[in-house]
Amino acid sequence: MTTTGGMLATVAVALAALLPLASSQEAMMCPTWEENPWCPCYNNDYGIFMECPMVSLDMVSKVLGLVTNPIHSLSIYDLDPNVTTLPSEVFSQSAGVSQLQISHSNLQSLADGSFEGLEGSLEKLTIKHCKLNSIPQAPIFQLGRLTNLDFENNNITEIPSFAFSKLTLVSLNLKDNRINLVSDYAFDGLKESLEVINFNGNNLSQLPLSSLRKLTSLKNLQVAFNRIPDVHLDEHNGLPTLQYLDMSSNRIRKIKSSSLSGLPELVSLSLYMNSINSVARDAFSANPLLETLFFSHNNIRHLARETFKYTPKIKTIDLGNNNMQSILGGLFMLLRA
Image 1 (tube, rainbow, N blue to C red):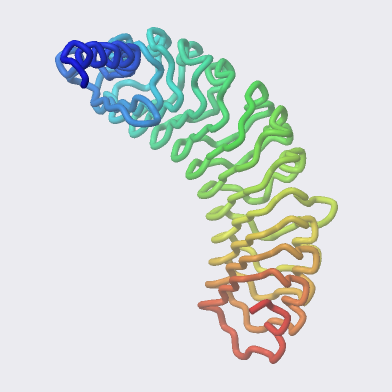
Image 2 (cartoon, one colour):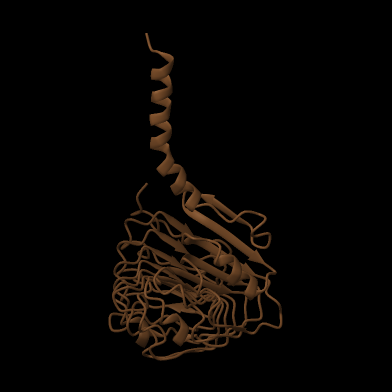
């Protein structure tokens, strides 16, 4: 029979074992509401999440000083419209942030020391729906762990030489800017790391192949909603590692025999909402891994019987909203069921 004293001893031992865990969980906790009524904060399995809407940057800095553990995700948005430059030392009291998002503000530039305190922790930086007019090289070059950079919906017009040369980016989002010029050396330094680029919604009149061809790990390229009139991705100008290409809503009229011959790893191709009226019978002869093809909303009237002869793995073909007058027998004959 277990005595009362024995039971109490067992409980005491169990509580003692839980004390370090409780202390650890307490250390991970957000500041109390009394300490921080400005920035909602919560914990989950990934860590600490904090949002600071319509809060001054001085107050953000103060709140960060109350958190003793690194923050997984910090979002700052709807800043005072008079704030046009992100000053230095906002994050200097921080214990670290893995993902930082600043959005819906009038930020036009970043001070050189903007990310002081985040050099060893920041992995993803998002500054979107702001008014950045150039790539802020000096401040981002301090972020040694940064792999994901998102500058969507700003006023950037040019990607200069060596814009990201001190970083090891895997993903770069430049969607919905005003980019019309990309230097031949824009991505130097990212040769082996960069896998994803999003140029959707810019003012490109041609693919920046001189810079893109240097990227030996590029898998996903999105350049929809630009002003590109043709596709010249032949063996001499190809992207041999590319798997996903989106050139929808451009000004492309023809897909020639050599247009895609420099894309041997291509799996998905999206060309909807162009003005395509001609597709060469061997247009896909160098794309044996192609699985999805989106050709809707063009002016295609005819496809040769051999068109899909070279793509035995294709699963999806979207030809909706074209001017197809007939479908020749045998067009889909070689496709897998």
